[in-house]
Image 1 (cartoon, rainbow over the protein chains, first blue to last red):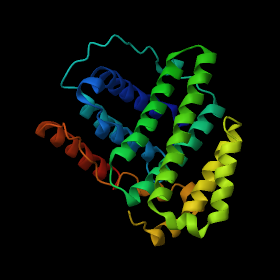
Image 2: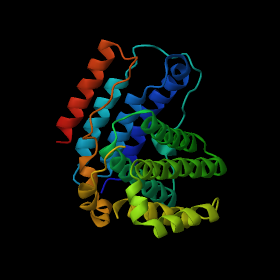
Image 3: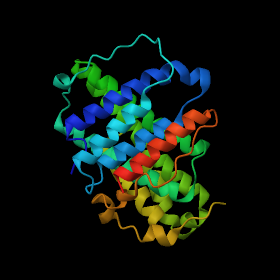
Image 4: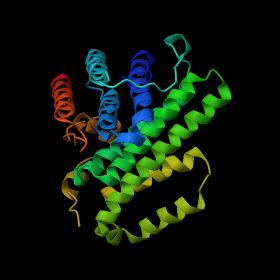
Length: 216
Length: 57
C-alpha cells in the first residue's frame, strides 16, 4: 500500500501542488480557476490509493505532472514555501486520518462521476479537494504544532464536506433512492443535524451511512 | 433527471472499495478541459492525460 505513509512520494506531490498553488493564487481571479489542473492533482493522488500501482508508477506520474505544470506565465506572487523533506513531520495519526478522508472522498467522487460529467457542481467539489491540499501545504509549512493541527483538521473538514456533497448530488439526481429507503434517509439526515460540530467519529459514521444509502 | 447506473453501483461492494480495487478505475473519466484553454494548453493537458493513462494502464 502506498497511501500517504510513503512520505517521500507525498512530499513530492505537495511540491508540485505548491507550484500550482502559487499560480492559482495569482491567476484564478484574473483568468478563472483551472479545474483541469486540480482534476489532474485529484487523479494522481487517487492513484496513491490503488494498491496495484507501484512506487515507480507514482514517481513517473509525478515527473510528468511536474513537467506539465512548468508554467508558461511567471507568477510574481510573494510566497516562498520553506518546507523540506526533513521538516516533513506529520504524525501517523494525522496521516491515517487524512488517508481515511481522502479515500472516502475519492470513492464518493468516483460514484458521482459515474452519473455526471464534470460541470459546475463537480467543480465545486473539486474546490473542496483543492482547499484541503492548500491546508495540508500550510500545515507542513508551519513548524508550529498548533497551526499544523488546525490546518490538518481544516483539510479533513473540506474532504468530509466534499464527500457528503458528492452523495447529496447523487441523491438529488435520483429521488428513487430516497423513496425506497425513506426511513433510513430520515435517520441519516437527523443524525447529521443533531451531530453538527461533534466528534470525528460521527463524521466517519455519516460518511459510511451516506455511502450505504446510495448503494441500497 | 440524470439516470443512475444502479446495477453498476450495486455491484461495487464496500469491502472492495476499501481494498482499493474500485479505485483502480481512478482517472478513467475523461478530463474536461477548461473553456479558456488555448489550443496549446489543451494539447499539453491531453498529452499528460495520455501519459498518465499509459503509466497506469
